Length: 232
Image (cartoon, rainbow, N blue to C red):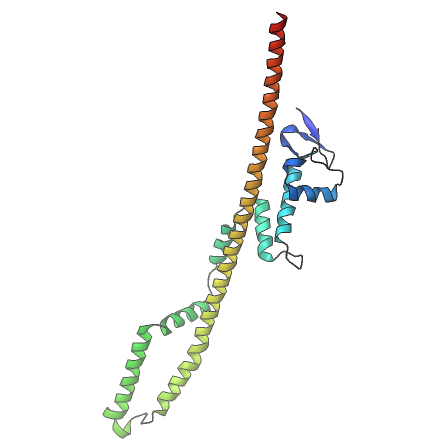
């Protein structure tokens, strides 16, 4: 099996795994050049070496002003490196069961923001007022100005408001988590598209080189055939 010597590590690899310096892309070539100044476009590296520099190049694309990757971006890089999908992680997070208190808060917020609650509460108020004003007259258990009713309404409002806020805060947290997951999926898609473009460019260059080599061999054969016919 034919082998070649890597232009950066000096190790030998199969020829089929070789990638020439002129085919790795300008940004990756410059990255290699900073570590190995003697590396030239005519030198060759292995596919594994190219993959490690490609991952480093993608990390540099994601680097922030603080020169640190965020947790979401690190998750994307790990997913790219391991070949896993982001959707698996998203489904695991969304599949987590809600606590009893969270379910109660959601039910209260759902019922409190419905026409059922509004109509039923209006009916309760009307019945309360009619009982104390018309049926029981001045002997009602809560005569006008309905102090007990005001106390009940104040207590309901005081308890209902924080419960609804709890549910709203949790929904906002879910929305933020979904937005973060969408960002990770879109970011990974963008990086994979870039990698795909690089791979396609690399394949095209390899095919062109193979075609050029075939043409050279065919020309040499034709020249030999012409020489043989002339000699005859």
